[in-house]
Image (cartoon, rainbow, N blue to C red; front, side, top):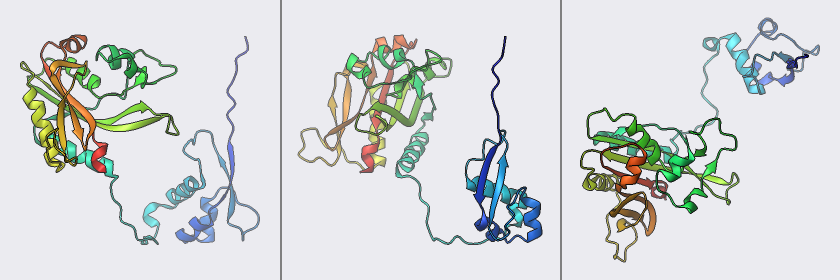
Length: 295
């Protein structure tokens, strides 16, 4: 029986690294030592390079220039100030996320990092989500395991699974996560969009609604967002309004509104949801989109 063999060939590239040679201030002897193959015409800083198949990190001219600098020695390169005068700054959404993480940790909450992929059952059935919510899930076309079938559209299932695997820890558990979720959005080039969410779960023998409500107020205080009653004419702050989300206990759930738009939900999780994740104590939870606070 004949076996198919993978053909592995060297990659041939012609590269102009004249600028790199000029910055390194190399002599002709150094160039000869560092460069394996050169063209016959000495005036043109063009070299032909044979890249072996094992060097998968060589993709562009800049990678070859970096290899040249490594061979020459970084410590031997004369230091120089950059030509442009720029000031770096963090991405605004990441900066806000880090500030929220710091505040939550300082108030006694523990950050967790869960998988971005989950099963369809975790995202839908276990959370008692309606069918139309399942239509916004980004599905994996060829999942290797039933645990990673869709991209998460909520952070809560991952946190609840974390609690289920740490039930031996001393109560109460105060866990939170600040990460992206993904929704289908046909208006985007990729047909989906990321949203940065904050989710927190308080797991204890009483599952106090007041604790998660107090956390929401603390977050808004840190963001300098004032509370405004739902019947107020002003729309610059936040308010809460009763909700009937199926993932939460009836009468113990509320939507979070910011500038008149719903950005999240909090309350006491439904007993069926707790049973689906093999949890034996009550949970109060909060999840909201933090991107509107950047506007």
